[in-house]
Image (cartoon, rainbow, N blue to C red; front, side):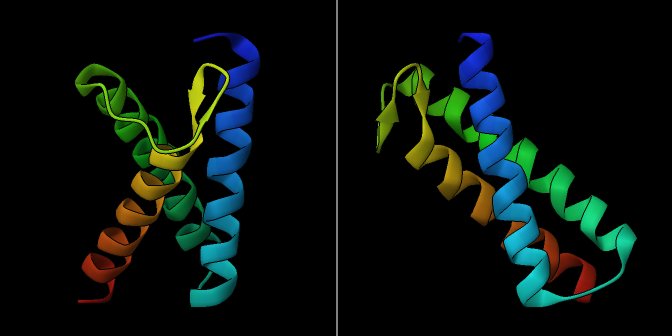
Amino acid sequence: MTIPSLILGLIIALLAATIFHAIRGGNGWRLLLFIGLSVAGFFLVEWAGGLIGWGLYAFGALDAGLGVVGSVLFLLIGDWLIRR
């Protein structure tokens, strides 16, 4: 993976985290948690999809579709766990 695709992936993950924070609300610590969960989910699922050979929406060397799915999945699970 190239550096521009890493930066694009980071921007997409941060955008997903901030949109999720705007919808769900919370304080600054929750925003930092959402950012960490989103980045981890994006790159973990994007990496796992590359190993398995899955692809949803490839944008150059970056599979943005699987990354967004992983980011949203991690955000939903993390939000569910902290609200319990």
